[in-house]
Image (cartoon, rainbow, N blue to C red):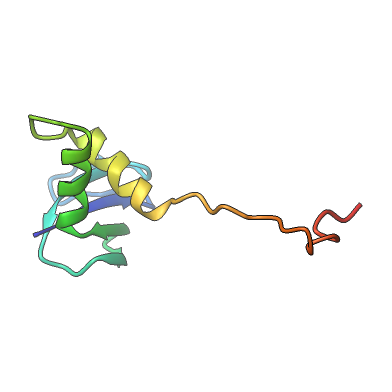
Length: 96
């Protein structure tokens, strides 16, 4: 089972009458393949189970990660920093 982060992108009224606001989020497990997909009034970010398992082991966590920790792990999976290496032949990299 893979892990997902579900983020609401637009306000709506749930079946029970509760107002759900954009920006609310939840995490959980699903059988969907990793990737980003549209969902009902939101977006689902799905990561492989092994990725979460690896991060938990690297951090030496002995208890189940909290929802906020899982959210951060999933966000980090999709928001990796891009490193730009400037080489000597890139003379015109900085244009004034």
